[in-house]
Image (cartoon, rainbow, N blue to C red):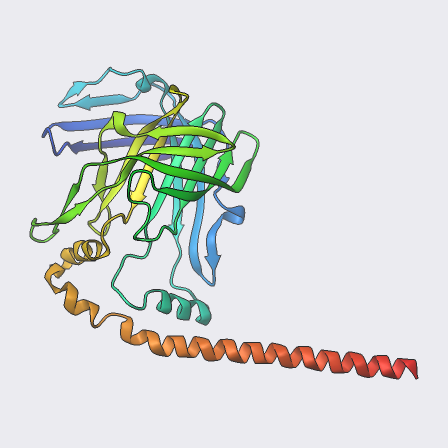
Length: 324
């Protein structure tokens, strides 16, 4: 609940799957720096009606010590309960593209296989001193960035009390992976396969090296709206083996594409129909879309050439006339 500008109350309760204990959290957070768009003008991206409207409060601090219970017993442990810091992310998904050319491109992009739309990505936040960082790569190829030692380029934003800078370039490297995490059918409960995620990174930004380490919090994940495991974990930041801040780790769609699709289809009880569904979705509709786009591009280029030729002829005519 938003109590006021920059003031947020989180009240939740749940049952821990492993211990069976009922847990609860009640905490109020206040922003320490202003809210910022996460892309210029708030669109990330907004092209032809597709995209998202996206802003954040990057630095949220406890107004008072949170009320935490585990199995009905108040938790009064670690020091983080006094000085924790968080990130409020607020994002509205875009609708179906209204521009015809973006509709065609979307059809082509989804042309061959049943899949989720977001794709494989990492999203990381860092709280270091008076700066807050958001690192992201939303275009990781399915068959890359999956082993210890793999690296990936990222873009990152830097937020302070006075300004934000967008789309700086950095690098992340996998230092440690989770154990294989089991994914289950939503309809039957049967195990469909396993997935692993990075939970410890080497991060290089601003010509500095940091380690973002989620291992102190264990392996933290939850099912997302597609029933696939979505990695979400708090983390500690080290520089030269000294703790310099805290952060957050998010990873999505590190699953094998078939497992990803089968797990999504299990919501409808159709995980065993995966192979048949691949024969009927989108692939047959892609050829006309590609043809239309090709013709559209050819006509556009031809039209531009005609305009340029006409402008050149007019320019030569008037230049010749002016000399006379």
